Length: 151
Image (cartoon, rainbow, N blue to C red; front, side):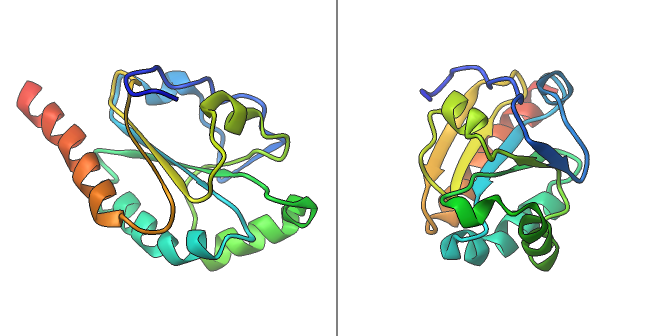
């Protein structure tokens, strides 16, 4: 995905955990952070406390959606996804992308990966890998600051 491209439709999930969300519900209201993770990804698990901190700290200003993207056959076990999500307090909506439908729509190959969309649903920041949470926080804050200035 290129910067400023619109958020893809959130379709193709084999299941939603913690409630289903549609693109229409996200766009227009507030910015959205969509993060891709996998049960077999050590870096994803390491970063999860910081993602959860974003979610909790900005709950009134930011939508946070998780996308479980399997990296192998073992990652397809729905019970394991639920268990790891519970262990790591992933209580935001989780799009279970076992068929890689959303990963393809995002052109995403990485976990963890983070996509920050402004409230119009345009991509403003992308990053992949376990490091750089400070950069992610900066980008999220920049998008949030833009809203404060327009209101």
